Amino acid sequence: MNKSLAEARRARVAVFGFFFLAGFVMGLWAAGLPSLDERLHLGPARLSGVLLLISGGALVSMLVAGPLVDRYSSRRVCWIGGPFSGLVLLGPALAPSYGALVALAVLFGLGLGVTEVAMNAHSVEVERRYGRPIISAFHGTWSLGGAVGGGLTSAALHAGLDAQMLLVTAAVVVPFLYVPAARLLLPDPPRHASDGSGKASGGSLRWGLIALLGVAAFAGHLSEGAAIDWSALHARWVLETGPALAPLAYTIFSAAMTIIRLLGDPIRARLGSVRTIGLAGALATAGYVLVLVSPLVGEPLRVACAWTGWGLAGVGLATVIPVLFSAVGAAGGPVGRALAMVTAFGYSGLLLGPAVLGYVAESWSLPVALVIPGILAAVVALTGVPAVRALHHHATGTAPTPEPEPARD
Image (tube, rainbow, N blue to C red; front, side, top):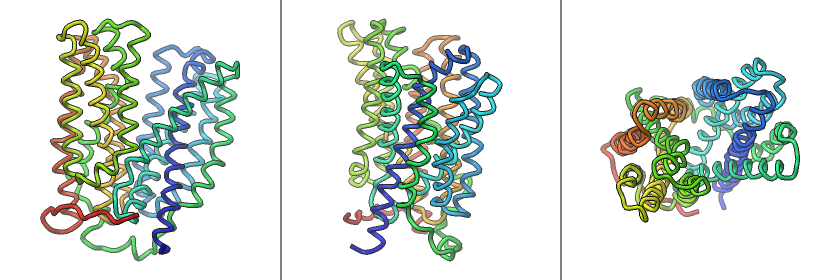
């Protein structure tokens, strides 16, 4: 085994570790929100404000992290961002009041954003070394980390443990867990390798192309956020299922997304990035169509129709972000700025989606609101396909050609 492949294999393990821990922190945070709400007597309005501040802090740090990655390398930013993102969980966990929570929530968001950009940038560097698709599984591991964090919180609460103490313990322990993973990251490239002025420099991607990628990411994330926030409520309010049955709509969506992310790399290796993102948009659109028509289906089948729709939406949306990030990496050169912009666009979809859909649902109805993510699912294909093709053109300097056969592991 040559040295480059050995480094890539170690770094792949490291990136799996980073994605798992990042998801684990988010799972702990999300599962601990009810306890935080009770301890500080926040209420819906204050809690929404805190979540908004976290998202705002993350967006700001994403835009800052991109140039830092290009200048200092994703490895160095991962070394700092990973442990920092775990440590700043200590702030919200120990916040003595709503006022303190406001400031500490911004700090928590800053840590999340830096880590998000740095670990994704390193993931595309590792995929370059491998010469075949491997990014999708990283995102599936993030989902697993979130599930483990949420499950651990639930188990701790059932055992009578204090949720605040669990967050404090995680904030102290997680930074140390990042260290062994960080040691396995790819070494920094030689200075001349990242300063070249070749045509295929990822740092020289046109703003129009970055914007097109960003629109695809925004559409995919908003459609994903709509399923996360509204699938169970659609089952309860529109299909009139029982309280115990309604959450299965989200469970089906989440399970489909996680499974396809874990298994999606061989699919992209066979189909290529262009066809994969086109198929992703088509499947997600078909899924939302089934959800939207489910109230018109006869009583025995309407729930099954909606569940099938959420499953298809999860299958389609699972590969959108991995394909977009991988295509940026395949363009060559520094990727920090481009990834930061695309990530910020996507994160904006998750941030704005719940508010926009909630307003439309309040003014008209939830089925009308869900037309928006249905349309945006189609936008994923309409913008993602030309954007990925353009990136291939940028990488080769010629008309788009079929993707090369993947190198063997």
